[in-house]
Image 1 (cartoon, each protein chain N blue to C red):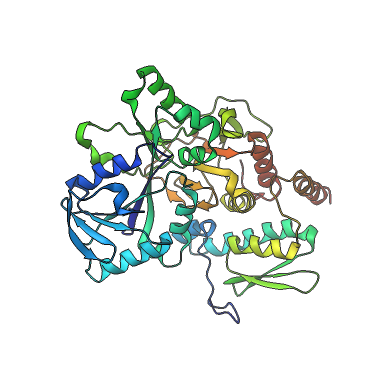
Image 2 (image 1 turned 120 degrees about the vertical axis):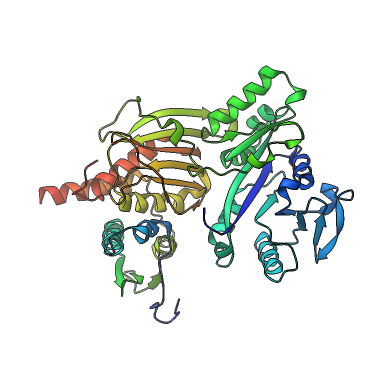
Length: 343
Length: 110
């Protein structure tokens, strides 16, 4: 991992339990080297942990954690926080944990981190952890589009209030999230958050593909692009999850033109893209992932893989359909792609 | 970026980051050239011209004489939107895909 400070995001719908989780984090000494950004100190209830003010809108807690309130824009808060760190006004935190409001779409946060000309040199996007309320998940799934945004953006998720529902219902909620976002890992907190170190652990492969990278057994169309899984979630205003596979090696340059135009035109509907690509331009496979308009710089996958492994891409979309994506990519690769490359 | 000439511009877009990490020092230039050719094919039906400016920036020119200087693909698509004045370049548009297929057929059949 590079030396930029990771910004981990805790998101989740209203009443999901984000603040409860955040309080546990703030009290845990394992996060003593963290800065936590909250909207209001009062919401979190820090009085019993408070050691004192250390800077404007920043307090030091007994765990060693620095807690700051956000006034106005997130980009301003992160810049100010870094400046304070640079001047020694706050301890040299190694990570930032940011709690969103219950109705927040995490997409703009990711975009801010990736595109702000100052922030991108000091910070990088870390793990997005989504808290899913077991009691209300299926109702939110039917009626709250922002819930879909939050689940789609998750790298990891916690099912909260599992003790208030049956084990079967808790499992159904987990399966619901898993179908929507198959690459998100479920975090099962131990009592007292004893396994808190794993809360924001970051895999080198954000897709979660490598441990079980599958070769497609789905049907193929003319250029061999296939489908290995698909799911339509009718309760979520037309959210679709599908995985497409591409045999052989890909023309990265052509793929980049296609995907950049797709993101530009339809970014708001592309809730999440994750994939591992075998490309002509690189010996090592590439890991790509993005949230809405933002695609992060691709990373090389460490190690080697079998020659016959296919490239795979997961899409979580709203109102964009699997067949039109496949058809579009087929046409771009076959008409614009490097004619000397073989697919 | 120099606002007058764009000579100090740079392409930091994710589509270009692969070549920069590669072992072949010419890979960046080769992929840039290929990328420009691909975008030209997309813009040709709209008579928008795309030129490489000193291998650092790109200039877009419309039939009406409007010119935009951009650094990377992200900026380019926004500039194309402005030059198209309400029309959109959409990779999911069946008409665009049909045009690409037709152009390819014409190219193959001479």
